Length: 280
Ligand code: HPA
Image (cartoon, rainbow, N blue to C red; front, side):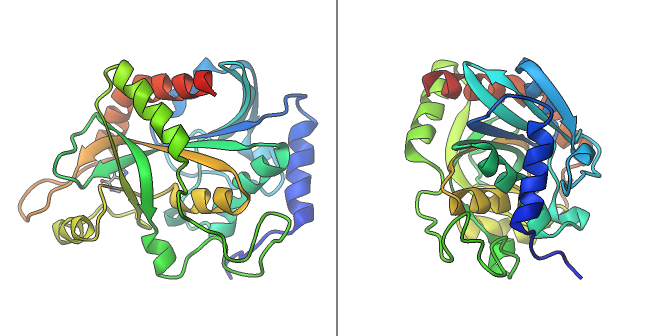
């Protein structure tokens, strides 16, 4: 049976294990997506804790996701960084996917910056560009897999959390300003979360475009919902690693392509993340 929910004592066990390893009290959380792990190299005073050493923490199985928590300092802020994350397609429940977010909340995190690799759906988007998330479409949530399903944990937030302005307008403005000044090709758009792991068919791509998606990926939305539920401000940034064919007969994306373009995007994301932190 799927693991629907964790108890407060399980969250607290994870928090205690992390606090036993470091005195750093992070206020900013960072999640690094596929191929974007190198961003964590800029962290000062880094304390690295493999996910498997934290009670109840989900351990990633995907190549390109290292799977450790890094606590340290970045641009004057105490940060906690998830180097790698787990996904629904790996077989994890929504409770497991969002477990780290709630641990971050209990650690003291007030602001979360989430990055991901995504495929461009908007015809004006190209591989190697950045999309600042303006909003999201929760397609797997609409189909029933919302991370808040099950008894509400009142310690974190309300039963029916508001999802207007899930992506903080002030953080988006700062991110866009940083990108503009650094001449980073960027857009603000709507991210849609699908379960994966298969990439989208041309018919999927036409459908996703029709319903208002600008970029598609297999993560982020569950984490953002859990973060917003507990009142954490969120900034979401996609690295567009590939575009997607919208008609039959064209080649589709590969995981290798996603990782390769991810390397090009790392400096862009690093610049934006550091610029935003500097401004906070
Ligand atoms: N589709 C879904 N997820 C992705 C893609 C894509 O094309 N690229 C990177 N993550």
